Amino acid sequence: MPSPLMTHLNPIKILSLNDLRENKPERPGWSLTFGAICADAAAVCLDDGGHSIPVKLTIEGIQPCEIQIQWDAIDDTIRRFNADREVATEYGAYGIAALIMPHLTGLTIIERSVKGKGLGFDFWLGSLEDPGTLFQRKARLEVSGIRKGSDSIIQARVNIKLEQIRPSDDVAPGYVCVIEFGTPKARIVKKCRP
Image (cartoon, rainbow, N blue to C red; front, side, top):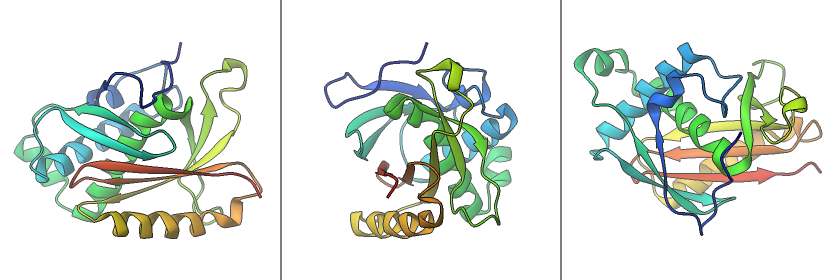
């Protein structure tokens, strides 16, 4: 049973990056191997930002709220594996998005989008609220990460990503999720079909 959607009235929810490594009802289409990689990358990005465990993640956009994110301390092996800052930021953002989207929208990642098909997004989302249609492509998700950026930089990235997913706007509603690790915060915008 999915957890209730988050709102600004709900108490602060605590989510663990370690959940990305485990079978969870809110992520039935998520690869646990990929989840472990994304969890490590997100932990490195948060640790590099000097954040304590847990950290408050501010959500802006579709469901303004705060969520506590916790993770295990990282070691030198994890840090070395995530030495490429750009890749770590991208995969860390994927992990945070996979962690929070089911709680904010009732939608979960069910399938990776195929690159090079001109669709412009990262993942297909399915509805947790109707198990009979879970693996039907209900929405699109484009994720982006920023290590440290102002509100104007975050909004500029959102605008770029909204434009990027435009070629597939008539396929399904879309979400753009930009994770900024410096504060940290997430800005999530929904784009409906034209």
